[in-house]
Image 1 (cartoon, one colour):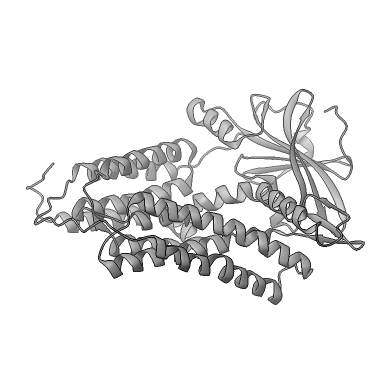
Image 2 (cartoon, rainbow, N blue to C red):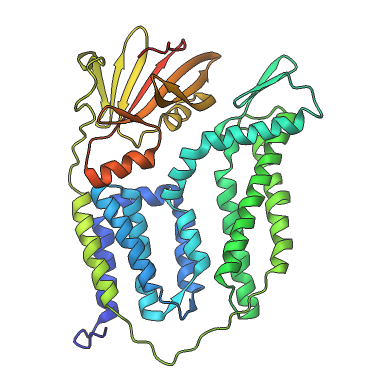
Length: 416
């Protein structure tokens, strides 16, 4: 759709972007604080390494923005709103140039706060699986008394694998180098990789990252160096070099770009997709600024004496008794992340059935003191173990959802 009555299209678009970013300044600052280099690199790559494509990319981009903004509007999810803003910039660039960089597009998602949160939610499960496979390997070469979650008992001593061994930074560094290599190959041959080639190379990067972390944990245990120090980081860099970067340099030789540049004499920008998404982004930006009332204590089970509790902040309520410590939170505050941030080590995490309901059971440790913790999501006094499930309920039915976490120095009995 053409708009000949608008004489300054590009200037108007730049103004729209500036206004949107200004409206969402706090969200943008928070999002860039942890992923500035990755997001900046992805956007620069998208703007400089894009290629002309005959694929109608406006439709999938608009669809993704609408989905992200619908969730953001209903749940006030700022990370998804920032992701929608990033996709909006991609949409505008594509509308005016017909250029699209699939490499940068993938990077934009993997360097986002959305991916960080997903990775953090899976951290404990990933760590336990890696540690168990390391145990299966090392027990054939050294004497390991036993493994308990992330604790290895070797020669009457305990070696714990901490959160730093999860390799999120290694994964992002490997991805960044992989994107750089793919871009160099495209510039070298003046041709482009197909979507299938890009996805296959990214899949190989994931496999290399798993292998790299696997051998890194083995090396750290053999050197008894699981705490962060100079040797710990040196081992990480060496594993990154030998198990990710060097294999990437070899694998890239088997990937040859074959798609030629599509040449168009003139391009008429379509502003209808831009107008539609601009309206959606403005509406969501205004909605997300509103105060959202946290009703996590609504219809709470009377067994929790809220008169003895205190508010830690607007999203966390604490009840402390002699027997146990109880936290009632918004669903975003997963206990495993909070414990790790407060210096606790996650020994074991698994689902159990208590009173015919499935909940999470976790062993944590700090200062050689072990604690036993149970947690679950709750909606209408029904317990859930899946964040996606409870957020879906809240998204479509607007029902209050909370997270309940009970912790004690002794294992709870089966009665609640």
